[in-house]
Structure formats: C-alpha cells, structure tokens
Image 1 (cartoon, rainbow, N blue to C red):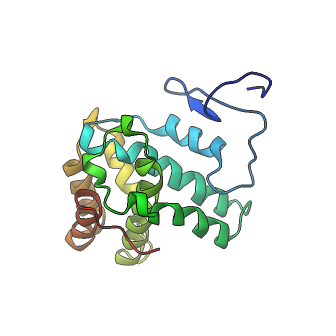
Image 2: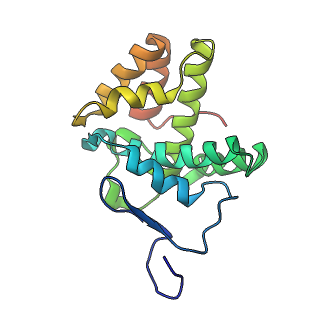
Length: 178
C-alpha cells in the first residue's frame, strides 16, 4: 500500500488469504510486518477470548523468527525484539484474560515472548523433533479453541511438563526469562 495515504497501521490482514502492507515497510527488521500479516493468513482457526492472545503473539513471534531464519536480521536483533515482552507494563499481564481492545500491546509483545519460550521448551523436550508449529497445526484444524485447548495441544506435542510451563505463562502474570 502506498505511504502517500494515511492508512493507520503499517499492515493489516484482510480475509483468509489477503493482507496489505505499507510500501515503506522493510523485510530486514525484527518483527517484519510482511511476515506478521502473512502468518495471519495461515491462521485458520478462530479463538475464544481466553486464547485471543495467541493470534497476535504467534504472528509477532513468527515474523521475528522467520526473519532471523532468512538471515535478514541477526540473533541480537531477534532477542532485542523479544525483550519488548519483558517491559514493566506487561509484567503482570495474564494473557488468557486479555481483551484485544485494551490496546496495551501485551498480546503482541508478552505473547510473542511466551510463544518463543514455549517453542524453545518444545524443541528441548522433543530433541528438536517438534516445534510450536506442531501445536498450532493441531489448533488450526478446529473452528474455535480456548486457552485450555491450546494447553492440551501443547501436552499432545511435548508432554505435561511443557504444558505446566505454558499454563503458568498464559494463566498467571508470570513472564518467561529472555
């Protein structure tokens, strides 16, 4: 989308397979908006209030992670982007109780940090045989899912220890360490 028009956000997903992004948005920055909006087009399932955080948290995480994997940013930029989730304003945010309309950014920033931490735990507990994508794949097969169903999918993919970890970081104010 051209930058000569005031669009509001830098990008927006529109429908199941469409999105737009301002033409000035770069591919080589952490939190790449092009990939963020693309990830939204791959999210087929609809969430209930308790799992709404996962829509933006996972899109932000994958925008950052995929940009790193493509070699467009270094690990330090990836890490610095995740660091936003550790800000004091998000310290006590309980993701499973968030309302998207609050506008604090917790779903994006703390959500992204939580998804990254859960992805790491999944990889470690499965000897890198599974990832967070395996969890989301299970959820995408459903029309609606709750945070509890998200936790069940985590358990199916990586076991009860990772499920407990995910529960702690989605249903309490606890934040993972960077």
